[in-house]
Length: 106
Image 1 (cartoon, helix red, strand yellow):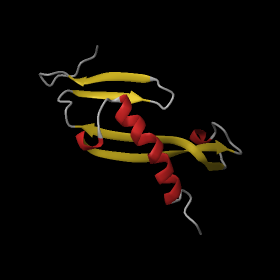
Image 2 (cartoon, rainbow, N blue to C red):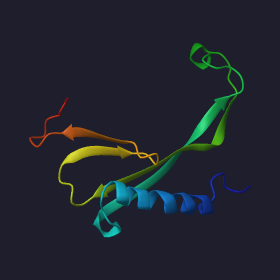
Image 3 (cartoon, helix red, strand yellow):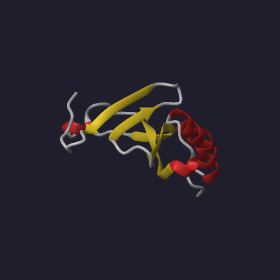
């Protein structure tokens, strides 16, 4: 049985996502400590939507389409922030911890 997500598709996806990562976060490959790539497949229920938590039966199936995620640690960022970007040029930044180590709710 062939893998559900072949290496060629992973390489093709990374070929698009890595340059976007470097451009969005204004960095270069040598400035990135590590990268993590993961994929969350889409899901459909053929039968039993919203009944599984009540003990009902469901018939789910995974989809080849889904959410591709590339996470990286950029060396020059000393702050602790989560920076999210999409390939549709949407951007979000969240402060996780302030300089004194306390969670910043703002």
